Amino acid sequence: MMSHQLMNQSSVTTFILVGFSEYPQFQIPLFLLFLTIYSVTLIGNLGIIVVIRINPKLHTPMYFFLSHLSFLDICYSSVFTPKLLQILVVEERTISFRGCMTQFFFICTFVITEIFMLAVMAYDRFVAVCNPLLYTVVMPHKFCALLIAGTYMMGGLCAVILIYTLLQLSYCEYGIINHFGCEYSAVISVSCSDSSFSQMTCLVISIFSESSSVLITLASYIFIFVTIIKMPSKGGLRKAFSTCTSHLTAITIFHGIILLLYCVPTSNSSQLFVKVATALYTIMIPMLNPLIYSLRNKDVKETVRRLISSKLHSHLT
Image: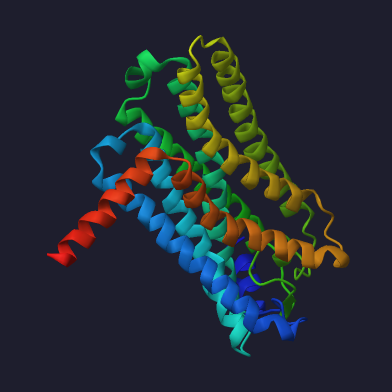
């Protein structure tokens, strides 16, 4: 088994990433667009992590999960974006076999971890809205840390299984990947051997991770909705609703794009769509999350305002 795996790895050393080379007139505009988005992503998510760390008022389970969501956004946007920026401005479009498999492993780990992280955040909102008096008892820090560890373990385990199935395949020498990164369907397309087992494994993992996350989220929000309707005071209703809308917005965008991407048949006519959809969930969503949470969150906005005013005051004095 090991010698077979080594033979597969040695039979191909390099892949060529097509990226958006079919549209040479858009190379520089796309480079500037993606560079701007990536910069905003890094600043926004690092900003969220710093704000949560410096404000003791934000040392709650909700913000603990949010800081990990921001960390994941930084991680998985950093898997594809630097290479995409490189191939947009440099003629050299190659990626090594090892580099390709490493890229796939990390994107798979971080995306699946985020799928489960969003489900954990939905459960947290369910406890906060439906059992507010027992919130600190039900969600102690140790339990929150275990939930976080569980999401990372699930992401890593799924990625290990998928990368193992990909390493069992043979790949065509100088395989041309019609994508800007080593996304699953793009890697499979340059395989010269039967990939049905790997595709079946990917389908099972995708269905399991998506369905379990969506079911936990739906169940949590059904209970939240029922609780909100029963609330007698409008102030309590508004507060409960505002704590959930940010999370619900992030979930809808993330799951919507992933479901759309993996429900489309991988024909040649849909290759551009696959690239655009992948760019949306690996580059755009990590930028949107801090905007969604900070723009709708009074505590985050207040901390940022205090931080800016203290910096300005120190400069003036």
